[in-house]
Image (cartoon, rainbow, N blue to C red):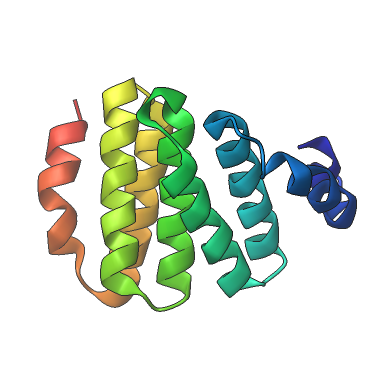
Length: 136
Protein backbone atom coordinates (compact mmCIF):
# COMPACT_ATOMS: atom_id res chain seq x y z
CA UNK A 1 0.00 0.00 0.00
CA UNK A 2 1.44 3.35 -1.06
CA UNK A 3 0.61 5.15 2.19
CA UNK A 4 2.56 2.65 4.26
CA UNK A 5 5.44 2.95 1.81
CA UNK A 6 5.77 6.67 2.56
CA UNK A 7 5.53 6.29 6.32
CA UNK A 8 1.81 6.97 6.66
CA UNK A 9 1.09 3.84 8.67
CA UNK A 10 -1.88 5.26 10.60
CA UNK A 11 -3.89 6.25 7.52
CA UNK A 12 -2.90 3.00 5.79
CA UNK A 13 -4.21 0.95 8.73
CA UNK A 14 -7.41 3.01 8.77
CA UNK A 15 -8.03 2.22 5.10
CA UNK A 16 -7.12 -1.46 5.42
CA UNK A 17 -9.19 -2.24 8.54
CA UNK A 18 -12.62 -2.28 6.82
CA UNK A 19 -11.21 -4.38 3.97
CA UNK A 20 -10.04 -7.00 6.48
CA UNK A 21 -13.73 -7.76 7.13
CA UNK A 22 -14.47 -8.38 3.47
CA UNK A 23 -16.43 -11.55 2.68
CA UNK A 24 -13.94 -12.18 -0.13
CA UNK A 25 -11.03 -14.19 1.32
CA UNK A 26 -8.49 -12.77 -1.12
CA UNK A 27 -9.31 -9.18 -0.12
CA UNK A 28 -9.58 -9.91 3.60
CA UNK A 29 -6.36 -11.96 3.59
CA UNK A 30 -4.37 -9.35 1.67
CA UNK A 31 -5.59 -6.59 3.98
CA UNK A 32 -4.78 -8.57 7.11
CA UNK A 33 -1.32 -9.37 5.73
CA UNK A 34 -0.53 -5.72 4.96
CA UNK A 35 -1.78 -4.69 8.39
CA UNK A 36 0.39 -7.39 9.99
CA UNK A 37 3.49 -6.22 8.16
CA UNK A 38 2.82 -2.61 9.15
CA UNK A 39 2.33 -3.54 12.80
CA UNK A 40 5.49 -5.64 12.78
CA UNK A 41 7.45 -2.79 11.22
CA UNK A 42 6.10 -0.54 13.98
CA UNK A 43 7.57 -3.03 16.50
CA UNK A 44 4.13 -4.19 17.61
CA UNK A 45 5.17 -7.78 17.15
CA UNK A 46 2.33 -9.55 18.97
CA UNK A 47 -0.32 -7.62 17.04
CA UNK A 48 1.55 -8.09 13.77
CA UNK A 49 1.89 -11.81 14.38
CA UNK A 50 -1.82 -12.11 15.21
CA UNK A 51 -2.80 -10.32 11.98
CA UNK A 52 -0.40 -12.40 9.89
CA UNK A 53 -1.80 -15.61 11.40
CA UNK A 54 -5.32 -14.46 10.56
CA UNK A 55 -4.16 -13.65 7.01
CA UNK A 56 -2.73 -17.15 6.57
CA UNK A 57 -5.94 -18.70 7.91
CA UNK A 58 -8.04 -16.54 5.58
CA UNK A 59 -5.97 -17.12 2.44
CA UNK A 60 -6.64 -19.89 0.01
CA UNK A 61 -4.05 -21.68 -2.13
CA UNK A 62 -5.59 -20.04 -5.21
CA UNK A 63 -4.33 -16.70 -3.90
CA UNK A 64 -1.01 -17.68 -5.47
CA UNK A 65 2.43 -16.47 -4.43
CA UNK A 66 0.95 -13.96 -2.00
CA UNK A 67 0.22 -16.81 0.41
CA UNK A 68 3.88 -17.83 0.52
CA UNK A 69 4.90 -14.23 1.15
CA UNK A 70 2.52 -14.00 4.12
CA UNK A 71 3.84 -17.34 5.44
CA UNK A 72 7.40 -16.01 5.18
CA UNK A 73 6.46 -12.79 6.99
CA UNK A 74 4.77 -14.82 9.72
CA UNK A 75 7.78 -17.13 10.03
CA UNK A 76 10.21 -14.24 10.36
CA UNK A 77 8.00 -12.51 12.92
CA UNK A 78 7.83 -15.72 14.96
CA UNK A 79 11.60 -16.10 14.83
CA UNK A 80 12.02 -12.53 16.05
CA UNK A 81 9.61 -13.35 18.89
CA UNK A 82 11.68 -16.41 19.83
CA UNK A 83 9.25 -19.01 18.49
CA UNK A 84 11.94 -20.95 16.69
CA UNK A 85 10.24 -24.18 15.61
CA UNK A 86 6.99 -22.56 14.51
CA UNK A 87 8.87 -19.81 12.71
CA UNK A 88 11.05 -22.28 10.83
CA UNK A 89 7.99 -24.36 9.92
CA UNK A 90 6.31 -21.29 8.41
CA UNK A 91 9.47 -20.45 6.47
CA UNK A 92 9.56 -24.02 5.18
CA UNK A 93 5.92 -23.73 4.07
CA UNK A 94 6.72 -20.42 2.40
CA UNK A 95 9.74 -21.91 0.65
CA UNK A 96 7.57 -24.72 -0.73
CA UNK A 97 4.92 -22.21 -1.82
CA UNK A 98 7.50 -20.11 -3.65
CA UNK A 99 8.89 -23.23 -5.34
CA UNK A 100 5.41 -24.45 -6.32
CA UNK A 101 4.50 -21.12 -7.94
CA UNK A 102 7.87 -20.70 -9.66
CA UNK A 103 8.71 -17.57 -7.66
CA UNK A 104 12.50 -17.93 -7.64
CA UNK A 105 13.04 -14.49 -6.13
CA UNK A 106 10.78 -15.30 -3.19
CA UNK A 107 12.37 -18.73 -2.85
CA UNK A 108 15.89 -17.32 -2.80
CA UNK A 109 14.91 -14.58 -0.32
CA UNK A 110 13.34 -17.20 1.93
CA UNK A 111 16.45 -19.39 1.76
CA UNK A 112 18.66 -16.36 2.47
CA UNK A 113 16.60 -15.51 5.54
CA UNK A 114 16.80 -19.09 6.79
CA UNK A 115 20.56 -19.17 6.19
CA UNK A 116 21.03 -15.93 8.13
CA UNK A 117 19.02 -17.36 10.99
CA UNK A 118 20.93 -20.64 11.04
CA UNK A 119 24.30 -18.88 10.77
CA UNK A 120 23.46 -16.71 13.73
CA UNK A 121 22.29 -19.64 15.85
CA UNK A 122 24.85 -22.18 14.60
CA UNK A 123 22.62 -24.64 12.79
CA UNK A 124 23.56 -24.33 9.10
CA UNK A 125 23.49 -28.13 8.66
CA UNK A 126 19.69 -27.95 8.54
CA UNK A 127 19.88 -26.03 5.25
CA UNK A 128 22.33 -28.21 3.34
CA UNK A 129 19.71 -30.35 1.57
CA UNK A 130 17.78 -27.27 0.47
CA UNK A 131 20.73 -25.30 -0.84
CA UNK A 132 21.73 -28.29 -2.98
CA UNK A 133 18.16 -28.82 -4.20
CA UNK A 134 17.57 -25.20 -5.26
CA UNK A 135 21.04 -24.30 -6.53
CA UNK A 136 20.32 -25.50 -10.09
